Figure 1 (cartoon, rainbow, N blue to C red):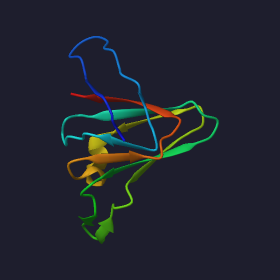
Figure 2 (tube, rainbow, N blue to C red):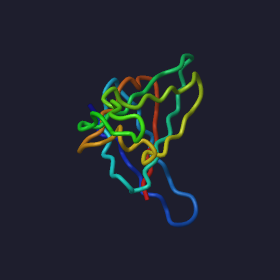
Figure 3 (cartoon, helix red, strand yellow):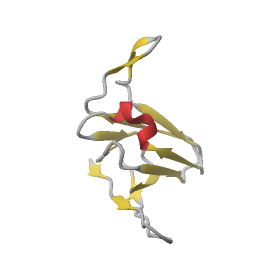
Figure 4 (cartoon, rainbow, N blue to C red):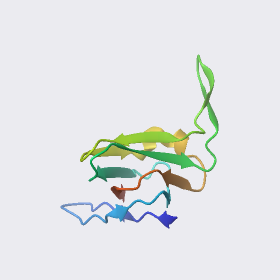
Length: 115
């Protein structure tokens, strides 16, 4: 299980990204409100589903609905030879806790950036 490298965004101009090659199980240090985002790149000939799950993600209460489980994690389907970009704060309920497991990503590279 490898920890993904997070690159701080430059305040101006271009900056260098770090490619992280995913294994079957990796970890991400998510910080709520830090403006983190992750880009998934799939070089394989088949779609790959990468799941992100915080170690404290269980259920959330949604007004008008009630308790909704987030315990299966947030799935990102990366198309064959394609890419997806995810702003992590938009799915923060799935990332709750002190560590986020990133699973199922064999064949995918990611770049993680933060403010």
